[in-house]
Amino acid sequence: MSEKKSFHPIVCFGETLWDIVLQEKQPGGAPMNVAYHLNKLQKNPAIISRIGLDDLGKELIHVFESRGINTDYFQVDYERSTGKVFAEIKEFNEVHYDIVMPVAWDFIEWEDSFENLLSDATYFVFGSLITRSKQSKNTLFKCLEASNTKVLDINMRPPFYHKKIVEDLLRKADILKLNLAELHLITGWFSNYNSDEDRIKLLKEKFNLHTIIVTKGGDGAILNEGDAFYHHAGYTVQVADTVGSGDAFLAGMLFSFIDNKTPEDALDFASRMGAFVASCKGGCPDYSLTSVYNISPVFQTKNVND
Image 1 (cartoon, one colour):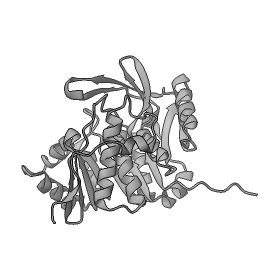
Image 2 (tube, helix red, strand yellow; image 1 turned 30 degrees about the horizontal axis):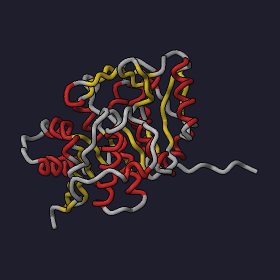
Image 3 (cartoon, helix red, strand yellow; image 1 turned 120 degrees about the horizontal axis):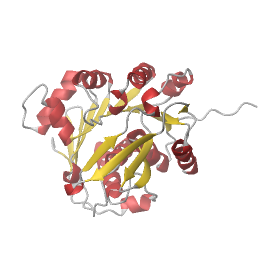
């Protein structure tokens, strides 16, 4: 009897690494963080990434497998080391990242097994950081050709982004998630709008995007679908650090999209997820959904077109 094929509705592509904060290391990388929370939400994600044949790589695999996260699409690099990022927490909980290069995830190779994995999945999640190397960038664009709904989680870490590459990624995306600073930076290339909604409309029209999600840190988030804008004020929490909070937010949005929640409910749940993770140390804390739902709202979501 053949083994039953595992279905992965969401595939995350890109960097998996160790975040090193104050000499303590935690598993990280945006794709891994998103997948971790989707796994917590019982959505069985898959990750395409690459690690080194070293102790840090072996430890990452152990961490993933112990948490029930699929590692079938991890590649092992026999020459380069597993990724590391040195994170420094600055004033107002801002995080500065020193991202080591080159490392294993800069050299993700295309595999024929990706074809069915991607064509079967509903969502393909990717970012801009992975394009800093030619090998992984080329593999990403091949994955995009085989994917269905493409979710771009912009992760613009200087000096690892270029205007042309960002524009190319935006043209491939169906759903765009970015923070307010990234919204202002990208739209500043094309306009000098003052209104955030006008900036969102510009990106949507210029790059033919279906959905745009903008996180605003402690000031909440905006969701744009069609002609409607939905705003959420966010949740008040005692911040431990902001590492991975945006990734948790995106996982909450995708979870809600798969379960066909209303835009208001999707934005509310994602805001809960992001705020809860910001209240915890590291991007992948252990938790139950009860803890997420116990966060109190500032005020409810609203459709500003009503």
